[in-house]
Amino acid sequence: MEGTSVATGKTERIYYIYYRKNGNQIEEKAGRQYQDNMTPAKAALIRAKRIEKDQLSNKENRELEEKRKRENDNLMALNCLFELFLKHKSHLKSLKDDRIRYNRHLRDTLGFKLIEEITPFDIEKIRISLSETLKPATVKQVLVLFKRIVNFSVGKNLCKPISFKIEMPKVNNIKTEILSGEQLTRLLRTIDEEPNSNASNMMKLVLYTGMRRSELFRLQWNDIDFERGFITIRTPKGGTDQIIPLNEPAKKILHNHPRTDSPFVFSGRSGGQMIDNRNAINHIKKRAGLPKDFRPLHGLRHVYASILASSGQVDMYTLQKLLTHKSPQMTQRYAHLRDDTLRKASNLVGELIKKVIKES
Image 1 (cartoon, rainbow, N blue to C red):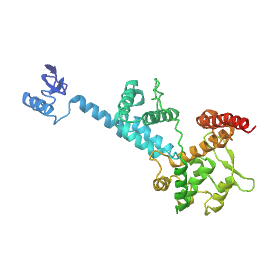
Image 2: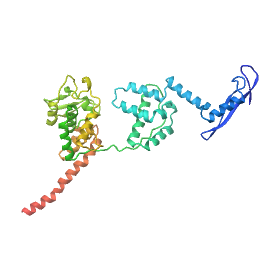
Image 3: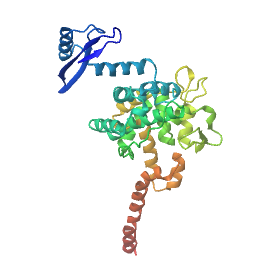
Image 4: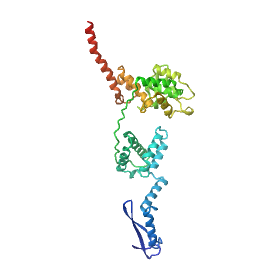
């Protein structure tokens, strides 16, 4: 093919090369006769290197350059937005898990795209791919993380909202963990033998009060009214401070718990708020021989609720208030335990009537 040289004004040859790569026929410009000092031999050499994959195609070079430009120039690709998200959300306890999820599942697939370039097909490919090896709950966490990054970025006027709805996998979150009498006895014995008072007393306090892990981490000595017998729970899931009774077993645990200069009952390093204690808690769980899928603190909250519900002496409204559930729906998972107890009590009537008739 011929063209006119911009530099000399002369007519010059334009060399193109043709080759196949990954099953695709590719045609691309090798260079101009005078402007690029291109010859048939040089064009043939370029073609050979393309075929041998020693060199990227022009299209691949453009895509790579665009990718580098977005990363280096700090354009608002998803990777950049995620880093800003991390800086502004540094107080979140889920930050470490968010980074792991992002690096594993989103960074390489969507990280170099602008939000406006991400399509429903991109998200669907990720959802299908993750669903092949991961549980629905984990897939949902990844997609929710993407939504949180987008919502944060929209709030900061860094991008426009996505124009489509993300379909989340269906997850059954209703899991009620119950320990048998033997397991509970073994756990309490192991707790009593544990030298780490923060871990052992935290587990016992969950069992006797049903408090959440995050509520225990935030618990300060000023929140405990030993005289009136109440614990103030600061900013629980419902969003407002709430008060629960301080029963005698819990009061005894707190009275015997070692005090430091820290305002926190279960203080972390340097007297600050505790961030994590999974190692110590899981050590107790392992020594007690509890099931692998039993979540020590959250599971003991379920044990607390299950014991009260199955007693038949606590109604669902009272249980809801003790658990500081915002709505009764979450408490309903324990309703069948109370119903079973009432059913057993009701079934006694036949035996009692037979006894009365026999004795008369």
